[in-house]
Image (cartoon, rainbow, N blue to C red):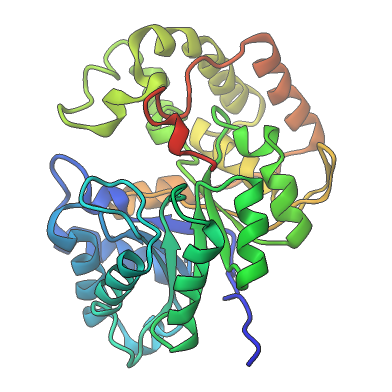
Length: 346
């Protein structure tokens, strides 16, 4: 039997991590309202939702999805695509073994009854380097073949893992961080590899976890102090005071370019930059860039509207001007931190 990747439509996806995996998650009813809003809006409605089995305690993210789908229009549910990360142990270390994959997929699928459900994609959260990656992908493929899930996504993979995966089974999409402050997916050649196979890139943290926002620039003196205790960002390099102060120079220049040149917000500039790259021809040695879907999040309809509205069409001259800002003001700090860096882009 021949299998194909799940088609990923639209310009955007929507991330749900902040709805369940933070020190004080928003009320469930509010999150459900937001999910209904972002998936049904006539202008920027998205069909791709991104979540994680470990996004919060006691399957909190999966429970949110179930409540949302149970309360939503069944016909609308069938038009959605849900990609859920899994395949990690209790300590959040990747476990690509058969039993781990089986447990994770069966647990995730239990929250998505077959009737009127979205297309369900299982996303292996990280590369378990103790097991050949082809074996891990093969274990997942068994569950596509038996109908438990509909497709496979990869996360935090490097070029060699992508090449190994596609020899085993069609890959629906790959999730990696991409934003103005974190262009590693471009610089390492990973985007070129994905583009060679036209595998869609799901760009997470498109606003660099809140750094690429008007609020950050306008409240720079208090921004770090406002991050609540226990927030994951406090452990990341770019949120350390010295790095934040250093990077604020480039951040303010981007803010000025957004407001004074493009008459828009920093958020809009950052997201429009990703949309400009998506599908672009002859970009940094890539004949034709693959489809890129940024997945901004937002716990309220107001935040969603702010993130998704009023996108602008950037020109090649805009891209050059933005590149010049970073050439003159290089960004300091790893994507995560030295301790976690070895788990990325494997």
